[in-house]
Length: 386
View 1 (spheres, rainbow, N blue to C red):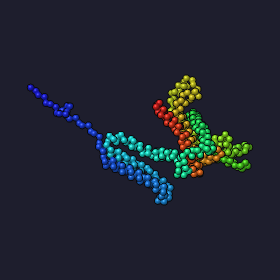
View 2: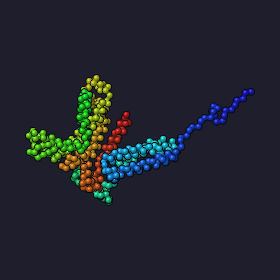
View 3: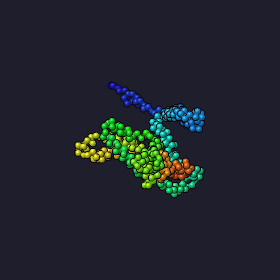
View 4: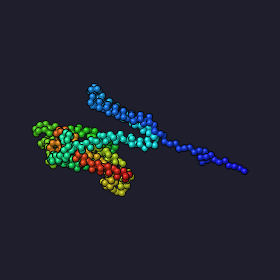
C-alpha cells in the first residue's frame, strides 16, 4: 500500500508563497530634516531680500551687486527649498508620499500666486471702502465720488473705444500680413515678418516716445520736427497739434495707432503658425474643386484658425483694458484721452486718494472678469473638442 505524504501546511504547491511586501514605513529623520530645511531656507531667503531692500549699504550701494546676489539667492533658495521638500516627502510612508507629491510641488507655486495676485486683489477691494489714507471705513463714498466724476466716465468711454477698435484692427492686420507673407518666397516671408515683428522688441514707453516724434508739433513758422507736420508743411499746409484733436476722439485714435503698431507682430506670428498648421491636403482639395483663393481662405483656412484668432483677440483685448504706458507718456490723460489705468495712477500718486484709486481698480477688475471667464471657457471647449 502506497502512502501519499501530505503537502506542507500553508503551501499551494509544496512551497510557502512569499508575502507581499508592504509599503516602506515613515522615516522620521528625513521628514524632520526636510521640514526644518524648508523653514530655514525660506527664512534665510526672505531675510536676504529684505536686507537687499532695507540695507543696501551692506552691499556697497551697488545695484549691480544686489541684482547678482538676488539672482544667486533666488535661484539657490528655490533649489534648496525643493530639495528639502522632496526630502520631507521621502520621509512619509511610501503609499502616502506617492499621492501627495504632485500637490506638494504645486503648492509653493500656488502660494506665490496667492501672495502676489490674490492677496493684493482682495486688499484692493477692501481699501476701496476706506478713506484716502486707508485708516477709516467710508462705505460706498469712494464709488459715489468716482461715479459722480465726469473724468471717470470720459476715461471709461475711452476704454470702450480702445476695446472696440484696437483688438479688431490688430487681429485683422496680423491676419492680413500672415496670409500675404505666406504667399511670398521663403526669404521674402522671413524679411516681411521680421520687419512687422520688430516693434514687439520695443517697450510701450519707447514706442510712445518714438511716435511722439511722429506727432510732434511746433508753432506755425517754426521748423517742424514731427514727421507728420513736416510732410504737411512741405506740401503747403499748416501744422496740426494732433494731441489736441478731441473731436470724435481723434486724438485717442492717434494713440491707438501706437498699440496697434506694437501688437500686430504678435498677432501675425501666432496666426501665421496657425495657418501653416492647416493640412495642405484640404487646401489642395479645394483647389481641385475649382474654389478661388478667397473662397479657400474663408471656407477652409479661416474655420481652422478661428480658435487661435479668438485667443489672440482676447489676449489683445485684456492688454487694451490695462493700457497705461502709451497714455501716460504722450498726453497723461489730457485733452480727453484719459483711460481707467491712468486715472487710477493719478488718483493714487498725484491726488493721494488711495480709496478712490482702489475703487477705480475694482471697476476695471469687474470689466476684466467676464472676458477672463469667456477665455477660460473657450479654452476648455477647444480642449474638449480635440
